[in-house]
Length: 168
Image (cartoon, rainbow, N blue to C red):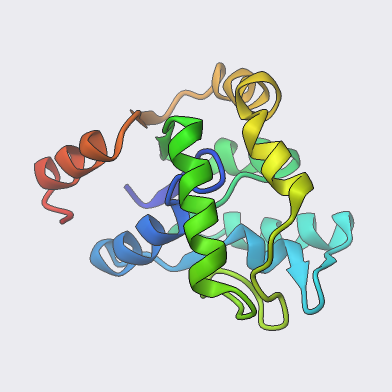
């Protein structure tokens, strides 16, 4: 595992897992949210996002966490491993609510400075509809992936995988 993607619904724990795994695996960590947002919750222009991402994926080693469906194809083309935290949406929503409370008004470590955590109804709606929109689109993009796909459906399955790979 030298070029690793961590994907899954928002609130599944992608960023937390990435922060823990990257140093253990000796891989540089890239958060898609740090590429995709600028201070003040300003979205990075698509062309700039794709250019910044192209520089990252051209490297020999990396761990990239985040979804950003429009950028998944070039990441999949170079990734040797995808870790898909395919957790239940109810759990993800619960975790999002906890995250909002615990980080409210402050930028999370996986976000650029100037993007304080806040409640966003549209974002919750996006997550609530993961299984009828973003999830199926992600599955369609994964259908042609030829590397190693590690699909973990529960936190217990993740813990078991980590133990089995000496990553806990």
